[in-house]
Length: 163
Image (cartoon, rainbow, N blue to C red; front, side, top):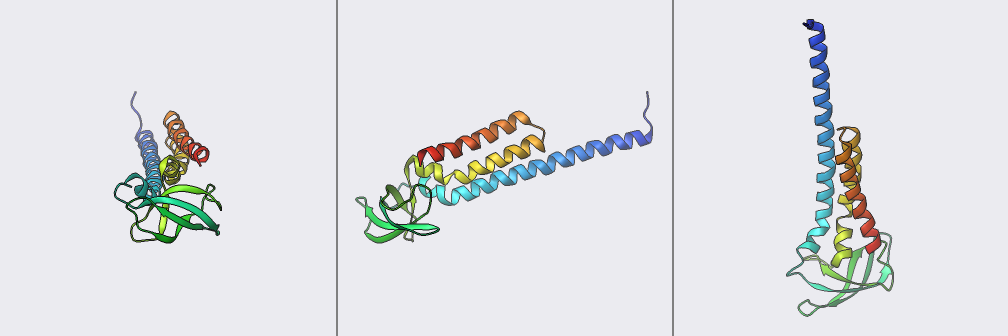
């Protein structure tokens, strides 16, 4: 059975729309994931590549809206610093002590260890949850969406538990 030219045109139009939608949603999911990695890497590289950097322990003495400051007790090879600043998080409260690494050329520190690593990758976890919705709804790939979304949620929950 031959199709008329209008039926063929409609079929081509539907296929083109499907490919266009899948391409657009794939790009949205990719942008979300790349933005999550980019945002996380800004802090995570100090934790992941901490060898050769200044290490020490921070004792939080004061917290503001966006950051906390405190005394820095250096490890063996790290120079003394009067005060350092750390990004405020749920775990950074007055009196708290935790290991840190100093960002080169600044008095800003980043928490190290498993809690610091998980906290640094938290933006990626949120991006994975959002990308899961795009993959499931826009790309119609429910198994992949559940996998990506669950992995992102697991990262967020692990961060909450670790801190």
